[in-house]
Length: 474
Image 1 (cartoon, one colour):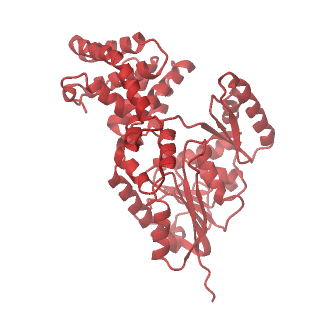
Image 2 (cartoon, helix red, strand yellow; image 1 turned 45 degrees about the vertical axis):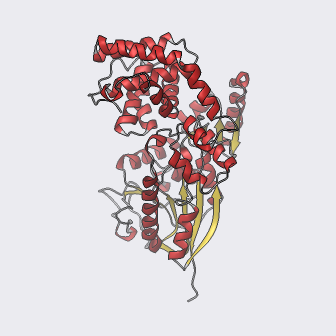
Image 3 (spheres, helix red, strand yellow; image 1 turned 90 degrees about the vertical axis):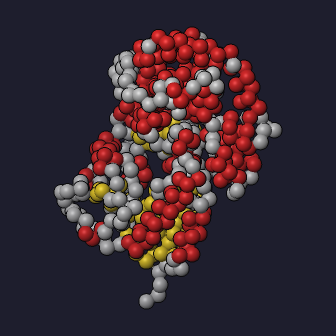
């Protein structure tokens, strides 16, 4: 892993490689979320747009290829454990740029050596320079091993190693899916997921805006052959760059960034209104709540364990022009400990009441449960997951989901339904979770079920199912 030393960043405000290193250090060694870590360094006004693009590519690309590049770098070190973590990560970052980007190798090598000299002195800078020269000479062999691992004849362990996935996670897939499906999942994890944009249907002119953005995207990316297309009525996905008109629409509250695959699973269960009242019980920053409100589906209550995320939901309501009368009541609730008792929720002040006084029901008609999960369906967008997830993490996620489902069930009225959604590809958290719940609750019925096709071009994979509380005759 490398020797622990205090991390101190130099000139990150105008240096895309230093900014990328800062984000990577937070992700790899402080277990931060990659998007949050990247957003923090991209806030610098001194990073030009091209620098931000390079920084983003360095962060996500290095994380996707981290396992192989880390092994490559450590192979040229006599004592990797004695090297400072920050130095080792700078070498891996430079190795990624040298191996996968078109920049001349002297740029990442020179940057890394200078950074190491400034932080750790001339001796270690000399070590770093020697390692990166060796990496450069060994690139042909490294690329050949990647090509062999990604060839049609490669075994699943070889393919997993080439794409930096732990073999035990691939083993979870191997127990449930065929080779073609697994190969598709692994290959998708090594590619950047396309960007998604949700148009605000509550604002007039959104249909014309959709056509304008699609036209602008086609013109912008024509030379690269990267298409943009619609997913459902109001979500666009971009394999290439988003046009300026899309960014302008976000700034004006006429659109929001959202994963197209995430929207697709939501629409599988909400093509129209569902039994009311509706509770989004793990709302996060409120992407799904906002999509429903824009569609004209009221959400009575949105809860999350994070005050910061709920505050972002309130800010998004204001940006999108959602009227105060339509905003859901929000409250902090840790469902892992105890479900929120709606009748006892304070209507104003404290941790709730952001929408003013409102009478809450004893039970709900629909509970949207976007469950905490292992996230194996989002490896393309959250590549750090491959560094962290182990089989025991999957088992812990399954147990947590089961406990929360059982606590939510009494808060659902007869005829109501729980819409259960995950962003993972793990049978135990998906089909197995639903089957186990139905076995524990004989009064429960199964409804719609959805799974992102493994052939989907959206790069992410979601699962959803409806659990319906049977209406017993009186």
